[in-house]
Length: 185
Image (cartoon, rainbow, N blue to C red; front, side, top):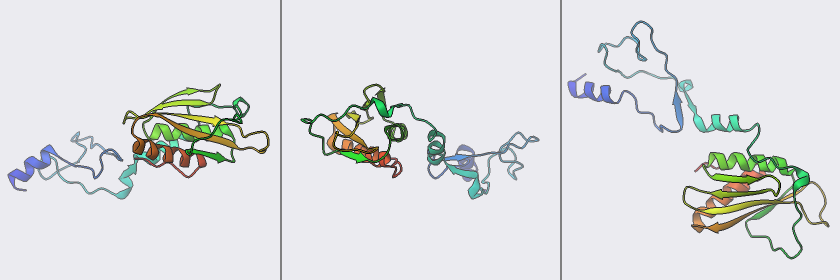
C-alpha cells in the first residue's frame, strides 16, 4: 500500500455503512492481541473481509428484547369509559384487543422512537415529550356502554409543538397499537 493509504487505514480501519444500525463482532487474535490477526503491514490495520453474518441490525435486536413487557402496565378493568359529551380527536382509533396488550405495544414504540413518557397506570394516560419538543398525551378508554366486546379506544392528543412532527409520531404510535409494527424514524 502507498504511505498515504497506510495512514488512512490506520486512522479509519473500518467504517460501517450505518454505524448506529449495525453491530460488528470481532475476534481478537491472542498471539498479536489484534482484532485483525496477522497483517502483511505488521501492526498497522488492514482491510478484512467480513461475512454477512458478522452484522446484525441493532434495531431488530432491540425489538426482540422489548417484546416481553413494556413500562406502561394498564389493567383492562382500570379503563374509564368515554363520556357521552366528550368528542374524540381525529387521532383516535378503536382497536379490538385488550388494553394491556395495546399499552405494551405503545410503550415499546415510544422507547424505539426515543420519546420520553410519564405513565399513569391508574388513569391509563401517558404524557409524552419528543426530541422535537412536541408534547402530547396518549389516553386509553373503554368503549361506551352500547358497544360491547373487548375493545379499546386509544386517543393521541397534541398539547404543544410542531404539527407535522406530531402527526408523524402519532401515526407510528397508532400503527404500533394496532400491531402493524414500529416505524423507526
